[in-house]
Length: 429
Image (cartoon, rainbow, N blue to C red; front, top):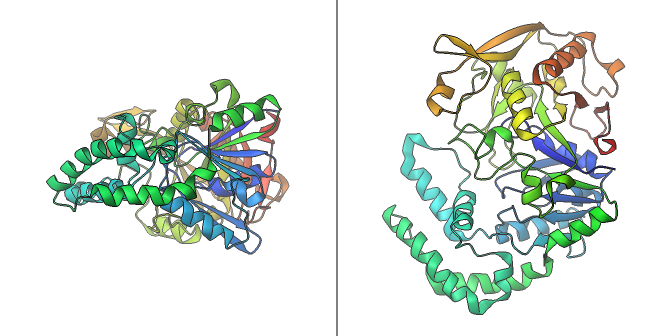
């Protein structure tokens, strides 16, 4: 049986949490492989709602959770999240959660720098969550990061903190922000060590053993392809690679082990924060979609911008993200609309183009080219088979398949786990 990687095919917030929860019931291990606690998955199981940022969603289903080396970890946020879900009856112990010993840590100075930079940008803000994810990835690349394994070696932390503070305090001082003292940070790390280290291990070994034993591994992505640091709408992107290829490097497995790549897309499009959004709706229809879809970010709480489905963008995500099948979520939100539009290209400098350009100026100037399709009067809410869907809703899904170049293999029609139409189980290949 193949493994499965789940990634977002738009700008994030596509409903990955529900899909990963559904898939976790078929998996043995669930792995987070990139991002930090700037991403959020909401899982609704019966009368319980779980909001996860760092913990792999499989823990809710009693499956082994692994946080890979591609994730930047705020230890306080991780420990707080563990305590919160424990309060909801979920067992999270070193027997159920393992953390890569080579994963970088997010420290308080990272969040401070993140916020200071955003404040200095003024109207040109990128829209970060201010949680230090970007600065932590910068330190990783610059080879000055403090990683989980370093907590076991207090003697080496002294020199590491010298280098870290030399860099960060210089920047914070220049931005007019408060600087950090070495003794305070050292004590912070020493206090965290006994609480974090019991979860630490070389997770690549566990994953390799699981692969050799034929166990099913689910790779859980955060954010989405259009927020990828290389392939997204730069600079309005996240600080990590969000494409499926990162599941390999972010977990310590070879690319051959990733298996089937599943891309999650809403039946419309949303985006949180700043950045280009060609198919955005700034009218009553956009407001209605946002209200009906309860479009508020799990982490930020900010209202998401809403617009028509952008097939051009998703087709691009399918190509660069390695997506082999699509999960289309929230189809029921479009019930009752007399007509729908699908973005099929962009007008730029008098020409029609079939890709989202790399230049920020060109992205901002791109005007959508729409195809109009008839809506449906019946309800798709709660549908659990193709036969339950209005005929025009089926036509809408089929047209999306044609335009994005990938089959829809799962379809969600409501918030409950069971409100899912399964065309093909991705674990079956």
